[in-house]
Image (cartoon, rainbow, N blue to C red; front, top):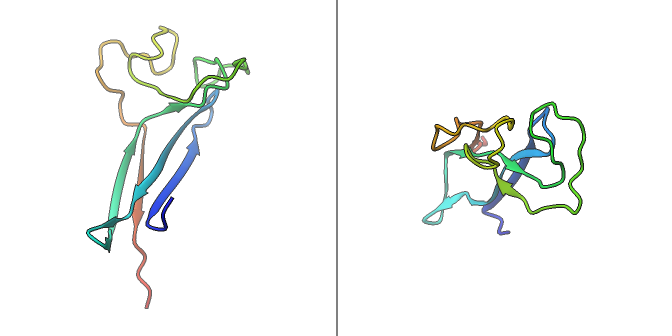
Length: 104
């Protein structure tokens, strides 16, 4: 990671192991700091719990799976909280807004 990049993560609560995040997002364009940026993000699954719904009981995944992006069609279980087979994209779940601070 470089000093002009930002990475951040936020857990989705309640949820089994879902989160949103940004990895190594560039805050500079053409050598200048950006003044303001909005980053729309999709939900991700950490691969540590098999729960399908926001309030599912603890159901550890053994062995742990890879992190994956949750989409309207994946995982494709009809009980999954994000299962929308008629949509091509999920409704937006989160947006990170980063604003450059001004100092006197």
